[in-house]
Length: 585
Image 1 (cartoon, rainbow, N blue to C red):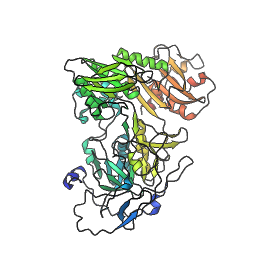
Image 2 (cartoon, helix red, strand yellow):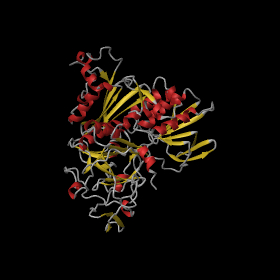
Image 3 (cartoon, rainbow, N blue to C red):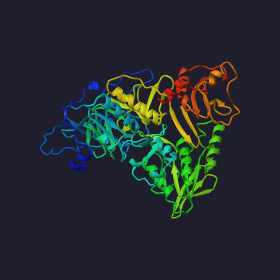
Image 4 (cartoon, rainbow, N blue to C red):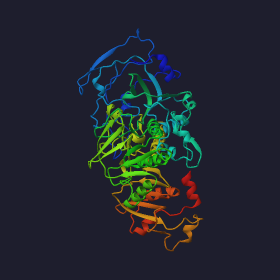
């Protein structure tokens, strides 16, 4: 049953009642203009509608209903008289649920009755992550009077995720974070060495007029043609425009393991950080082991960070990778060796090529079985194997799911249907260079959320972005852009010797002379180019953060290179002051 109105009034202060919005006509469900690579599904799902939690007194309401037979599902469903029921094509099968979503169930198989009222918001944002927050900022800037509802499955307001595996472990004085149990108390130093909270905004921001934030709520269903969503408690909300920003969920272990063990955690949310941090601090001067499974950038950064903090306690850090070591799917072998060596020097015990066959728990801890027959004892296990897009809500709404990349299919304007958009990890969109793609990175989440909001306001802006992420691995920092895949051919340029004191004039000194960078360096400062059909399709800047703008230009040029020497000059090795200022901006 829905919670009492008094509780929901606290969670969701109702805005001033707007004039009633008429049900959309048949033209409102027509798809957006198609492109050569965007084929939208026509029509919308016939969805069941539930009781309203905010209805105070409906006992005397006279309601006329008509029974409609759904020929697709063979179930009786109740709708208001004269309300449209549109046919919907089948969606691709794709599992996934998470932020802002409920279980993937067949919406048309449930008999529900619609009351004569529903709450209305000009804008509804499903998901309380980075993409949703970026959209919220843009909507408030462009339409200060528009009512906005943000729905998040998490129990905290939107926050920055990258510091969970980066700055929160590496800040100069992390002692204030070690015993923190309140996410709002977690702080870090950014790249400008300014102290910041991981929370995007304080509580007062969400108390603005016309801004409503629902925490610990899921959205189980959506009807694009009727502009309606159904919350997990059965409530129905009507929207003018809607953004799906449901994000992704961490991949779980696929082998037998205790499902409810307090010693096993994934690593994606701030609550995951608090659990792992607590496991690190809970040593009682007894030697303990924390094991991280995964070889990607989150697992590797976390292993580095844990090793740094483990020096203060009697704790060992182990990183298990199923392939050839940390970041082996991303970096060429010689850089992977550098990363592995750096990890070992900082106290990480690396076990590569080790597939887990199962995990057992006893009062003394965990026993992790490996494919080679060995067993590893550990007090805590962190699972960081990657993520999958949360598509359950899109499935329920009969929206098209990308069978290759995952995520919900959108056009270059990030539009799925009329007045319905997607952003962040969940969106699979088309751009003219990389074709259809889905990007699971923080920078993309913020940028796509902003562009989606601009288009929700009536603009028609195409979204173009190269995949981009960054990392901190001990003394090394990197920025990865484009297609960064170790299976591709790579060409690299590395500085030999110390960095000149006046690096801004350094390039001009060598103009027309021998290149100032060589291949026999210690791989301290350099640029790695990933090649496909003699074009640069990806770039890793290794301790070269001030060349981001130049690297983006090299990727966008689509130039066909004739020699390796031309490739290594695609990005000028040293930046001008103007370039560096642009990159910092």
